[in-house]
Amino acid sequence: MSLGARRLDFWRVVTLVALAVFVALLLYPLTRLTLSSMTGPDGGGATVLRTYVEFFSRKYYYETLIHSLVISTLATVFATLVGAPLAYCVARFDIPGKLLLRALIVLTFVSPPFIGAYAWILLLGRNGVITGWLADLGLRLPPIYGINGILLVFTLQALPFVFLMVSAGLRTVDQSIEDAAINLGRRPVAVALTVIAPLIVPSLATGALLVFVTSLSDFGTPMIIGETFRMLASQIYTEYVNEHGGNPAVASALSLILLTITVGALLWQRHWVRRRSYGQETVRPLAPRALSPGKRLAATVYVYAVVLAASLPLVTIVVSSFLKANGPLITGEFTLRGYTEALRLPAALFNTVMLSTISTVICVAAGALVGYVVARRRDRLAGAIDAFSMVPYAVPGVVMGIAIAIAFGGAPFYLGGTVAILVMVYFIRRLPYSIRSVAGMLGQIGTQVEEASVNLGVPPGRTFLRVTVPMVTPALVSGALLTFATIAREFNSTVILYSGATRTLPVEVFAQVLQGNFATASVIGTVLIAVSLVPIVVLFRFLAKDESVLV
Image (tube, rainbow, N blue to C red):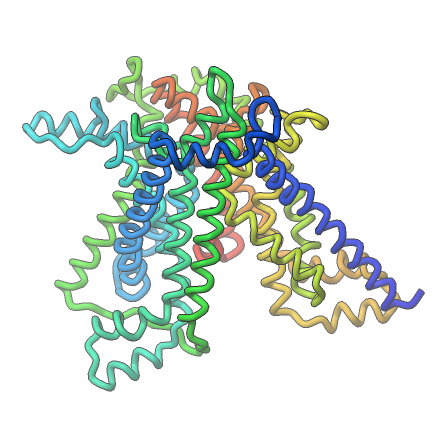
């Protein structure tokens, strides 16, 4: 057999295996989810589409969809209006402490989505710290519960998406464009709004999309702080795990409605951005500009106020983990007893680290191979794999969790609650990180060295291990660290699939909050933040990466 045939055979096998994995872990579960939404509790086929008719005809159900769309849209608007100027100020102006600001934004980015909800309860709840201080002064704030709290948490929690994407977009604008506009008589503000802003529209739109999809898919926050205010994602969870017997058909139908919205938003955003993208080459990126003392002070106050507001929940959690609790109330007395008395912490920590490590190793190994296929091969199968690898970005965690549970939790696999099913969902949800990281790096590397190795008689598989893998090792390590950090904080799919023996840190925090054990939740939440943050610190400190690697 010729070298070309051996090369073709090896990568053809890899391509077919990758395609089979996506079919088994993505297409098959989503198909089972669709079929489940069209059958009743008895499994009969007479109820096809009845659930959908009921959803759009009963106010109890369709109201959740309206709530979700309104809240997610408002959160997107607010996060964009606050986050875009924040990114511009940090990137363009001589504001002190930029490293600290970026670190706090990254810390907010890697924290679990629902942690901000119960942190704000500690601050602005009925017995909150800030609420008590203001009450002593005779001041009363609007209640943090319901729509107000959900919107606040969604906006501040999703703010880093806009910041990171706009920051990345600003790095693609050449300084000569701004110089030319100023030389033609434009004032700096007009240049920012009419020249630079149109050039970063794709980045801004991507950030807005991430805010919208993240807010729409988050069910932990509405359940913790929403009280009677219902949203679609939380309704899906409630229908699936109802203590009086879950209703998979209704949960599946609601999941498909949610999936349709997220996929539709992704497709619309890509179409809209494609029409408004400008081809440009960046020779000299935008340079920071000096401001007058007054403007510098105003920009500094704005930036620090926003960043501190976004990071305040995390600071609250860490501080309260070292304070004594009296039932659901946290006192001001310092103690370490919370860490010694959190009986479920060791098991949850072990499960989190173990599941994250196993899933990350599998993601990196598979991502290296699939990334090579996506970057190097130019056939229809490779194109199909590239398309499949984008789908997990659009599938909400709760939807993927229910789909995997329906497909593999019962007959004939019976994997419900096991390590295997959790690794399965983590793998398919986070595999795109490694694929994109490897494919992106290979796109910048020529094929001459690999071709020379094959022409010298080294089989394609061995060439990949000895030649390609060393070249893309930085991308693999970056992808591994980012994958570990995101899996460690994964909640939406975990809470659908876990069992008592596989409880993770995010699930344990959620359980403690629902039980009103805020002190214990703070202890476990602090450990979770540390576990999620360590890989990011390694990524920035030892691999010389910055926050752009997160997007």
